[in-house]
Amino acid sequence: MNDVVTSYKNAPTHTITAGEVTFTYRDLGPRSGTPVVFLNHLYGVLDNWDPRVVDGIAAKRRVITFDNRGVGAATGSTPRTIQAMAADAVTFIRALGLEHVDIHGFSMGGMIAQVIVQTDPQLVRKLILSGTGPAGGEGIKNVTALSHLDTARALLTFQDPKQFLFFTRTANGRRAGKEFVTRLKERTTDRDKTMSPIAYSNQLKAIHRWGLEQPHDLSAIRQPVLVANGEHDRMVPTKNSYDLVRRLPNSELVVYPDAGHGGIFQNHDQFVKTALEFLAR
Image (cartoon, rainbow, N blue to C red; front, side, top):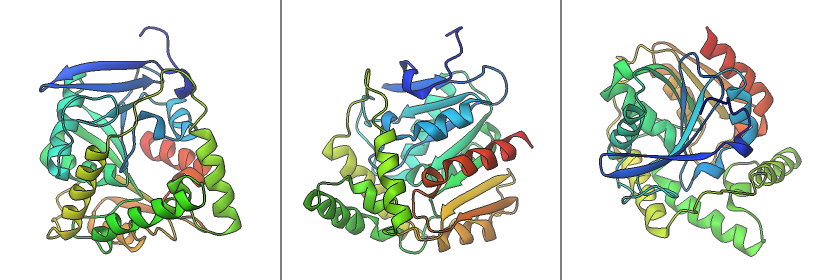
């Protein structure tokens, strides 16, 4: 661990056991400063993070990605609530001996991040919420139907479902989607286990419940928050990003034109620059 790893493609996979779960994680970037913990999306394992985003942030900050309970190679069974996933994430963060972190939560990860900052506010310095929405947010309860539909579309056209779920169907969006899917294959050794169908099903149930919840009071969250999304997010409709910024007292919004749910991956150069500037402030 003394040699600083700078590339996600070559970052070794580690394990740590806490709360009866053996979590798998990767850890890269400089050792100083507040680490940035990445919280993953629905059906996301370690290899689903865009290496351009991870490497871009890790050029200046320590970045930790991990598989939460029951995800990828991590043990245990995946919870059916966002709140339980948040408790597991806190267990993992504390097991690493970290007392203060920045969190980047994408999609479902952004929902988990919102719970963590409310249950363990002293743990979190800053938040980046991308492609996500608040509890009870508009359209979030439809994620299951949309995921099934686009998975079917992808199978019929021999494409990756993320091509439909994360990107627009414009020429720009199609190209960005293909480039993103190609980048996810750059790592060829020591790849993570794919998600089990039961873990995926449990995650869908948790997101559905989140979409049906009463809105949380976000006014007590004092941490600086950067909210980012594409302007045409089908999975977690973009109006949820505007809603978050309206309700979070210390927040700012970036919306990428001609981009969808995966806007931060389509615009990885701009996103990394904005995120690093926000984290350094």
